[in-house]
Length: 217
Image (cartoon, rainbow, N blue to C red; front, side, top):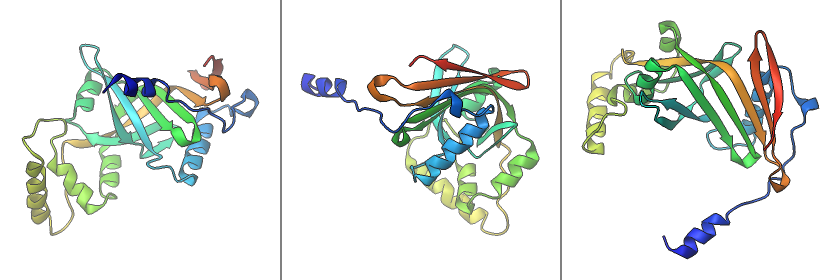
């Protein structure tokens, strides 16, 4: 990349003009606002509105991020599913603290979630696994997530092999596949503003209630 290209990157920016976020409009419960914003992201037909960046930390303190899909949320927390042999699962086994980020760029919004994970019950996992498309169920068997492989053909061959093996009856739940529920400790809502004067509100759990602070952009 030449110096002119780098200079162009440095000047890539736009104004955020879609509207602000005011304290008087904030509900007492952050999940009420989250549900409203998620519904608006779906209505706006954003690609992958449930996509969230999931951050974990390894034993050396090195952070890792990856995109995962939110599959459920309620007053108990937020839920996602994964291979329990994956890198993120190994991290969470040692350190259950987690950070999520929902980047709804076209709406000039972000939501950050901080919390701790617990594994879902086998009943919850089985129920969700069998609600997935059959090919996705087979795909869960194929990949030893985060392990090194020699070529994509290894995955494709394994998929065809298992598709043949499971052609009759239900696809069984892999023993290494499961899910997590994030108990929410705090949530931050970010709404873009003109001249980089963004609106940020930070909800932090205070016993059974939520404390709300406005943060400088």
